Amino acid sequence: MILVTGGAGYIGSHTVVELQQQGYEVVIVDDLSNSHSNVIDNIEKITGKKPKFACFNLADNARTAAFFAEHTIEAVIHFAAHKYVGESVREPLRYYYNNFLSTLNILQAMQKHGILHFVFSSSCTVYGQAEVLPVTEQSPVKPAECPYGNTKQVIEEILRDICLADAYFQVISLRYFNPIGAHDSALIGELPLGVPQNLVPYITQTAIGIRDSLQVFGDDYNTNDGTCLRDYIHVVDLAKAHVVALDRLLHGKMGNNYETFNIGTGTPTSVLEIVHAFEKVSNKQLPYTIVGRRQGDVEKVWADTTLANTVLGWKAEKNLEEMMRSAWNWELALKEKINL
Ligand code: UD1
Image (spheres, helix red, strand yellow):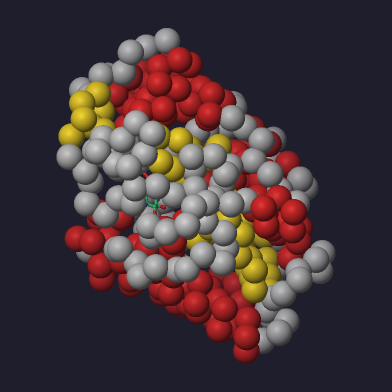
């Protein structure tokens, strides 16, 4: 059985679908602090199989220990974490407490039960504003700009140290670039609570009338059209990378017992290019205004995906149009549900 922490969340739920479709048995642990219990039912609608589900917070050591005592877990894919940059600046203690304690509790329980395989949700945020682009896994890790980013960096270090101390413990850290889009079924997708912090949900909510207008944060960057460049990746492609990583761990294919991979498309896209791609697939004109830069934004970052393509044997397949169309279909499906 594979434990997927945060499996009711955005990336987690898409990963559970891909795992089940490849024949893996999954148990989800999620406290539903940033997700909804009907995600579990919707996963079942897609795959025909209801994943096992336990609702609790993994920062609770006793509860986590009891969970591991009650289940036979072969590997852990660890998504569960607070994830908002701005919020982490305002509430650093809450971020450090939750993200560190949950990870440490899981690792402690894994050690106790001799569970040796771990996939970690890391982020391209560890590169900060890289001097050389695209970034490879060897690009320097920059001092974190926010507590959220710091939790990703420090947890990577903790995992590296554990792997150094225990040659049998095997970890893959996946550094995600910018996941967007939703499952083709439009049954699962991103469910931001309150005002979305990220670009694509803000765009789809604007187009459907929940928000008045998109604010584009800065058009005076040193890029093709002055707006920031990112490496946007379809969430289903990203989910599939986890299945490949898990296969690598479970089938003894690791070159080293700690490995890191960039998970992106390798293609930079500007904010305005995203807006135009959305307008094309939705046939709608998106109201937007250019405003000042957002504090903490990097100007540009995109991935060198050679390692993931060659060593992991994974490659992103979906293009920008598919990303934007699926995001829009998901927003339309959400509206229908609210109107029912
Ligand atoms: C951020 C984090 C990243 C985190 C990810 C998921 C930074 C530097 N990176 O990515 O670590 O994993 O969120 O939470 O903070 N934009 C607008 N208007 C908006 C929203 C966004 O113009 O209303 C622009 C941003 O300035 C940026 C791009 O859209 O250039 C993408 O922003 P966003 O979706 O928030 O992702 P990142 O900031 O790249």
